[in-house]
Image (cartoon, rainbow, N blue to C red; front, side, top):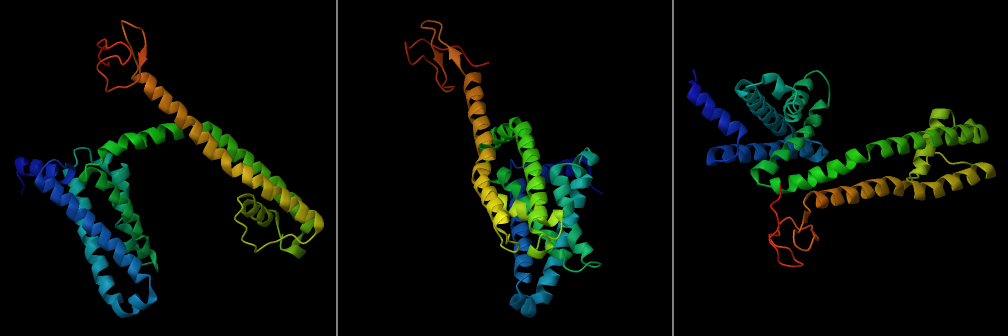
Amino acid sequence: MFSSLSKSRLAHIVFEHDDRASKTFDVVLLVAILLSVGIVILDSVRDFHDQYGHVFYLLEWGFTFLFTIEYGLRLWLSKRKSGYVFSFFGLVDLLAIIPTYLSIFFINTQFLVVIRSLRLLRVIRVLKLGRYVKDAEFLAEALRASRAKIQIFIASMITIVLIAGTVMYIIEGPESGFTSIPMSMYWAIVTLTTVGFGDITPLTPIGKFLASIIMLMGYGIIAVPTGIVTSEMTQAKSRRKMATARLCRKCEQLVMDKEAYFCKHCGEELPALK
């Protein structure tokens, strides 16, 4: 039975990363994740599966038991158990072990353990890459700001696909492979995104003309989401610069550099950032 002190120390090792023991725990965990994902990838290759399938099977169950114990340990050590269970990493930790158990009842579900690769995000803590988190937050801010515009764009694309698919269904019909409106919409999506699988192609002159128009539209449409996000990123960058801007009390010039201590225009000492 763990004493409260031992449990506290164990919790520090599992959840923190500021001493040798906790860093070792995280590194061992990351290595185990990489090995388990690698085993699943190799097991999907027929030649490897035929020769080493039984070894891969035993190793995968070994890693699954290891991650199951780790999940139970995190759950036991969590002060707010529901908070951990429904957190992002809590759900990922759970999804990392479920596929192997499901493979007892459903064929090939063990390959879903590649979800474990999401757990590699913990490398941000282990390798002290926290300085890049601000860049990720910057991108997330731009995506949130462009959410409404992107939603309008997607709704417009769905409308175009519906209309184009219906028109092609009327023009070409089942004889050309446009057997239904959903199938025609599939063709419109493939054509509009300039993917062009070629499994369905228009045969009539009118159908080819309409397909040409949709292809040309696709080139312009692809650039729209990029432009929206880029614009929001530019604005977000400007907002961040203004947030660190300081007004020089002597020459009344704005200084954007948050690292500056003196005005670059007159040399006056700048007020401290709030």
